[in-house]
Structure formats: C-alpha cells, structure tokens
Length: 80
Image (cartoon, rainbow, N blue to C red; front, top):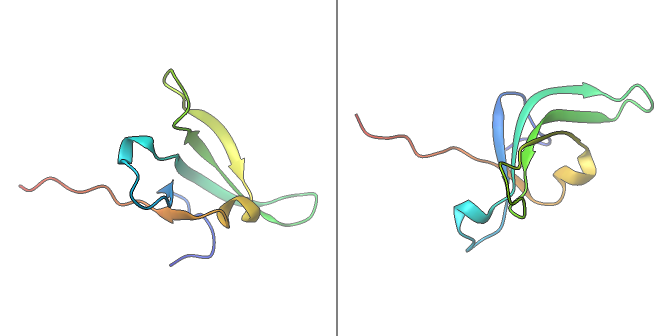
C-alpha cells in the first residue's frame, strides 16, 4: 500500500457498498514537490460522480486529499 498517489495509477475514493459507476476517480500522471513548501502534489485527471457531462478535468491532489480515503483501483481484466 502506498502513502500517496503514484504515477500511471488510477484511484477511486473508497466507499464501501457503492456502485462502481458512482465512485470518484483520479488518474495520476505525475507527482512532484510544490515549489512553495515542498509538499507532494499528484497531477492528473479526475471525474466526480456528480458531473453530468464527460466530467474529466485536470487537477492536483495534496496529501490532505489522499487522506480522504483514496485507494488504488485495478480494473478487472477480461479472460482470454
């Protein structure tokens, strides 16, 4: 288990018993320190379940956001 978002990984907000299509999603592209204070920032694309349209937007996540229950998401692979 990681202590923060990692590049090339997809995350969902951990919400037990919630339908997968209703989960918030974050795709991490890169992690870098903030020039202001050195705190890690994860850069990528997110989609909130409340978005009515395509909903993907670019964003940066902080350690505070990480602590809100994000977990790595590994989609099921098709057999064959």
